[in-house]
Image (cartoon, rainbow, N blue to C red; front, side, top):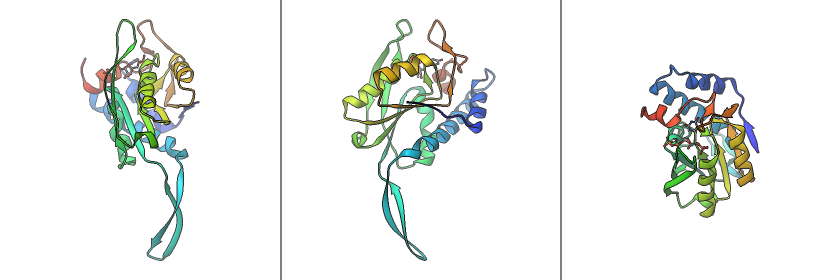
Length: 206
Ligand code: PRP
Ligand code: URA
């Protein structure tokens, strides 16, 4: 199911990221901040279990999270979302999946995968700023499912209907979270209006 997190803070920060005049530092800072804000919203449905805590005044019957969290950034651009989420969830483990798009075929090529051993029983958040054709995210999710993961959430900043449709078709069990649903892909697979090449803007490689 698709969830577009319409929130003034998120939209404001995303507008800064979209601007062609925004430099590397501000692009990175806003990406981290948006990722944290998104994680706060997305974690609303994480299961909890009862716990009794002794306060200075007595016993309190309350709840704690019943599941561990694993973050899986899709390299490279997903790396820019990790720190912002770890600020909120400092005990989360982090896996990595390396994928790049073949620029001619737009097909994803996996070049690296390493996941924490607790991934299968954890809530896994797959992170990538861009959901374009959906090929990279779909491949990352398949890689996790092949290793036994069942509770997977896909967290992207900007997506397009094509990418959403691809994930819904390949992985109907995976919730998709976006900060914005943009109009379309252009002829070379970039999101319009989007924010350009996320990896290059984060790492200053162009
Ligand atoms: C970008 C982006 C996604 C992918 C999205 O990565 O960060 O991973 O493209 O496109 P898709 O939905 O059509 O698969 P890219 O391949 O440019 O690699 P990079 O992060 O290393 O720059
Ligand atoms: N990857 C990006 O970094 N940007 C796009 O618009 C599409 C794919």
